[in-house]
Picture (tube, rainbow, N blue to C red):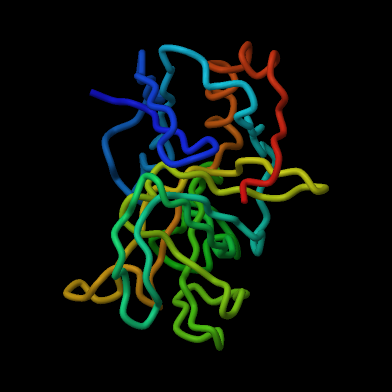
Length: 227
């Protein structure tokens, strides 16, 4: 029942069936930023290769620093920070946005933004960001802001990549996983919300490379700009 869509030179040009879904060992079910959430990652194996020319991106497996700019690319909903999501996700409409890695869950020192639920001694495996107003206010995690260009996630973005640019090359640093709503009765995607995902460094990166390493060794590890 699972397939992989491509918009390669047009809208929904290819639909490739999935042959297998591989869930990272230790995944306890969706837990967000609770312990166990750092295992929230899976891979899909396609029944046949993607067409020639489709870019393949390597992983960023170094330690992601606080304040790093993350570039999101997904097919989820859209809207604005004042009123929230007003446009639904569309598998043929790619949306772009950026935010800053403000905190990391279950870490010590300033990396956890001194937020009690994020204090721990676990691996740096979950990243979080807040959605600031253009003037930098209303961000519960503090830290730097990108001003008017800052974005957050919306429904349909789960599983999308968070890119970083290193020496002019794009690499996937994480997988976007969750987003909160500052007002439980309001629309998602408003200023003050918090989102995040799973980093592809450390144990997660080792698992991914063990599964797909032989394939990556035969493909270019760095593709063109995700834009």
